[in-house]
Each structure stands twice: as C-alpha cells, then as structure tokens.
Length: 453
Image (tube, rainbow, N blue to C red; front, top):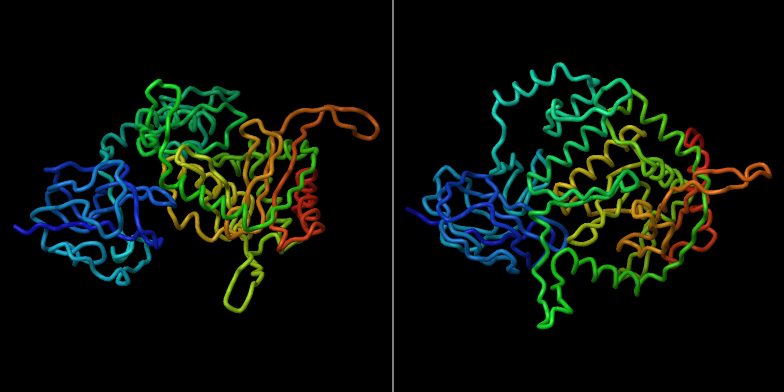
C-alpha cells in the first residue's frame, strides 16, 4: 500500500507561506479526488485545497493555526487510488516536490498551481438528496411568491414555507428570502451579523473560517496581544506602503441624493429587478464608471520600471468594492464593469457580496483592480479619507444617506443628503482632475438621468 505525502502548494499567488485555518478531514477518513482537505489563509484570502488523489487520510502534519512554508508536508494519504491524476506541483509518491510550472487552467477557470485543469471541487458537507429537494418544491407550491423570488430561494437553498412574508399582499419578497438565508446560515456556522437595513452592504465572512488567532492575555487581564497574520498582515503592509509611497490628496462634497433614492425605490419595485439586490451602492458604482470615462487618469496606475516611471492608463474598469471582514480588508473587484448594464452590475455586486459572506473570495477576484469604492455609509459614517488600494490611483467613499435640511429654490426642504469623498495619488492626478471626477460622481447621484447620455 503506497502512501502519498501532500506538500503545501503555491496557490497561484507567488506566496511563500500560509496558515492552516481548519482541517476538513481527520485521520481515517476516506477521501476522493477533489474532496476538500483543508482551508488555508494566505496573504490574499481563504483558499480550500482539494485532494489530488484518493485514499485514506493518515497523519495531519500541521496543526490549525500553524503557519506553514510552501513545499512543507501537511498531510499523508494511504492507499492512494492508482487511477488518480499523476502527482504534480506540491506532491509526489515519495514526497518530492515537482516543478510548479506544470499547472494549467482549463475551461473551468483558475485552479491551484499544479492541479491541472479545473474540475468540480467537492465539499464534504452533506447535500440534500433529490427526494428532499422535490419535497421542498412541493411544500412551497402554496406560498405566494413571484417566479424570480422562487428562483432566488432555490439558489440559496431556502424553503419558502419557512419564510415569513412581508409583502403588501402577504407575498414573499426578496428581502424576506435573504433574511431567511442569513438566519439559516447561522446554523451552518456562518457569521451574519444583523446590521439592520441601513447596513445592508456589509460583507461578513464564514465564522468557522474567520475565528481570529487566540490572543495572549496579560496576567492581570487588562491587555491582550493579537498576532498579525494572513490577510490582516498583508493589508497592514499594503496600506503602509501605499500611505508612504503615493502622496494622497483627499476631497469631498455634499450631495442631494434624493433622486437617487427615488430611482432605487422604483428599481426595487420593478419586475426586471425583482431577483437582484438594489441599493444606493449600485447607483454609486454606475456613477463612478461614468465619471471614469470623463477623467481617465483616476483609473490609471503609477508604474516604476527600469526605463523610468510610467503612468499606465487603463481603458477598462475593474471596479473594486472594499469589504471589511474579521480577517482584514478584502477588495474584490468586478472585471470589465464598464461593459455591464444596470441589472448586470446589480447581479455582479450581489454575487461579490454573497461570495465574500461565504468566505469564498478568491485571489483572482482581488487582483487587477483599477479603482475602488468603499461604502462607509453602512456604518453611519458621513465621510473619510481612505487609503488608496495598492496598484490603483483613486478610492471613492460613499457616506451615510440621511434626511437633512437642504435649500431648494430658496426654500429649506428635507432632502436625502450624502457626502462623496475620495483619496487620489497626486503623482498621477492633479487637483483639477480630482475635483472634476468627484463633481461628476456627485452630479450622477443628484441626477441619475445623466447615465442615459
């Protein structure tokens, strides 16, 4: 009986180490090819490592919470199936590492280096069988819900009979389904804090994966020391580098966003948007994309090379959305956001949110961003001076939207008011460009009809 030794692979980021977050298997477990063995945290994100071969788990060679170097042995699997794929980067029959350059990405998308073409990665969590699924569908027939809402419930695994309806006709709404999905996630060990309606854009992560390293408490209990590792360590390094490399200039402006709020209300009641999340962040995203077209330099990058510094202007928008999580700051981005219509952008924002909530944001999702939005308004904050995401030139903050007194045609009226602020690399963008860009974003929030031009 042969024994395979699995070495920690480079998961495609060029990193040198990772932390073992949680083992998904135990000694004696039978595993098949692509069963998830372990969840690790790199400097970029949480990553699940699938098994490259089948057999029975032998020894777990690294403990949860331990930081392991790439190439180190982390698990052995005995009685490996001879039909399993040939050993590649990260493992061999006798434990010798192979050249990571043999990895490839197939039609299924990006994969871990050395794992060959992408396939379906199976979770070891129990899935409902066909009979259970059919029973769920039959039991929900008598529930009042529109077809898009039923589809959303199916996608999220929500039984409509368990949902408390809040619609005007006693029907189940999209928010009802999302609320039930969040409640159910608690029982799946997924942390979903109830931020309330005003905080609907917060992005929690999986609690089972997000438990921070146990702090060291002082003898008198008055202080504790928390190790800085993984995502938080990488974020700290990146923010320090950005703050002391790129000279930041910050600007802000108050905006009457009443028409944006009216548009959001109309879209929420539109059948075309019944199955997607609509919020002011959607209009903000459209506004930033629109304003980038008029001031391309905010979407550029400062590049140091052997031939001297260059300003690289990108004629596409990979729109980053900053997400504060217990493990640190993540900035996944929507690729080629300029190509999406409003509904498609709403769907992309929702997918980004759900992916982050499940702790499944991949390194690829965070790479290649060109400009970032941070929605600090969900925390009740009006404005700020955020630090630019490394590799970018600008970051824009959307503040809280509140009803405030506002002068309209010489009269003081209650209006929905917010503040748009942002920070920019002054090496790339001058004051006039920064001001024009922020003014353009504000103009769209004041009059979303500008998006029709």
